[in-house]
Length: 431
Image 1: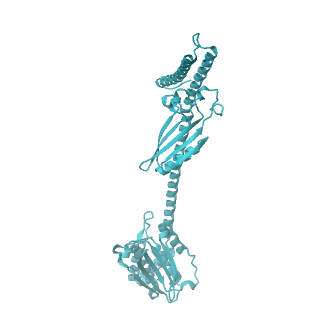
Image 2: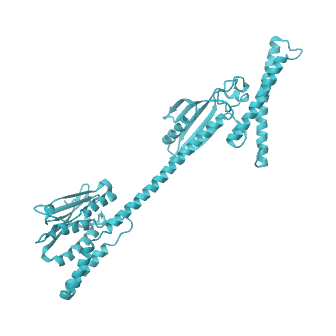
Image 3: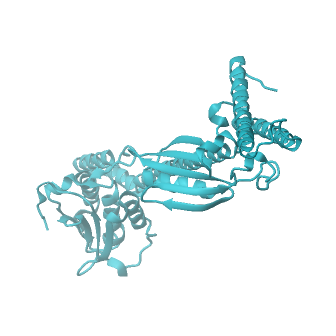
């Protein structure tokens, strides 16, 4: 039973009656023309047509009428509506695909190839066209249309598909045509049982599904990228927050002692500690510091140690002013300095010297922290976490664009060099 808006139902009934009447009228006129030609050529129609001819006419008209009604009913099942567009044997679709033309063509080609009973596919990528033939079957018997069906007498064995992709700005426009493999005049005498409508809808659904899958994949990729970025930021913040607690405790204990024995040096130590802590405050998100800021932090740290170690610690810094503006990962220079003190100079009875050097190179800026301590041959309780963190942070921030090398210093000690990409104003080479 038909349901819906009364005006829509009336339009559907009128379209159905017009379609059925058109098919029946075409066959009626065809029989009348055949009868007139037979009478004109052979005579014998004075007493009316013979009963076998009348019987053939009545049976044919009955089959035509039931076939047309079946076509209308099936079209309504497929499309959910009945109008001149859905009842037509030839279907046209204009589909906008939000991909560039080549990608849209590949999507359309794959959708057509997956259509059931598709054969003789001709795919021309340069012209962005796909042609294909589709075997037609009786939708109620899953076989080819019966030869006793008058609606299949005019060569109604296959349908054909023509798909053309037109390039646009970042998108492709698809023109899809699904029609019988027969001339247009034959549409007056036959129906396709909605098979071309079914093919057009199937291809459109396949394209929509593939576009939706691509969108879901892109959204999942974006979510994964955001998650990876959040994990990276978390790792950077964790590494950034790694401050040696013993240094802080020892500095405060030394300052407490000096307040009684040497207040001026205690004041100097606390001032350096304040400077160190100010430069150690966590930065927003994963933004980079500068080499100058990291140098100030390392200088404050080493000046505190100079007060504690006295003549056992010497400091030499050679970082040209233009290089101090180069972006540099926070706490990384500090890690190398702490490593040189802890594993190089503190275990050495006579102490030694720390060098901090920076040079401009073709691939960026090289920053070196060197010492003349005990070097690689010394027994050390270090776990290597600090240097591992340096490598990990360089990978997270720069990928393969940065480098890290640690070698033996001459005549003793270790030299660690970090190379980061960076453009220097003026292009001066400070090597």
